[in-house]
Length: 138
Image 1 (tube, rainbow, N blue to C red):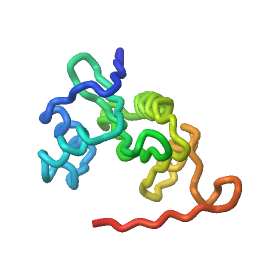
Image 2 (spheres, rainbow, N blue to C red):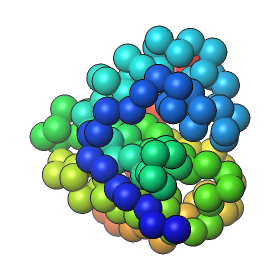
Image 3 (cartoon, rainbow, N blue to C red):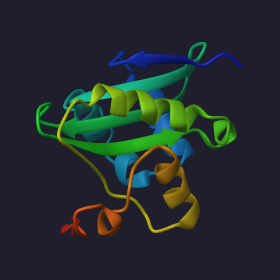
Image 4 (cartoon, one colour):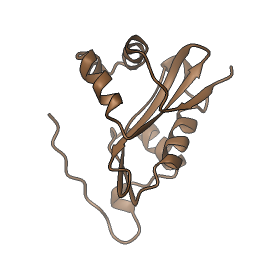
């Protein structure tokens, strides 16, 4: 398996829907046009390809100067646990030359372990005092 990482490469609508659908992210796939616009409006993204097959994606939104929000990190289930997610996130974080990087994710031990292994810390454990995150999901 030879995975090719690409920065901000165009991704076709069907490939995007197939990838998000493969991980069950139906909130994204319910409105395909919105998903396409979301990717286009991202600050940057890194995609992983095995030949012509899109197997993973990591994307960030933000202002490019002070804040970068890691919005999505996803890898096709049949390609997980092969280092693709780590490679995607590492490359994305290298591209985010901002003061703050933020990521919101589910509260699962294996997910925490993944992000910790990639150099991120929980907000309540950051040196200099615990940070708090406030959200409104719609």
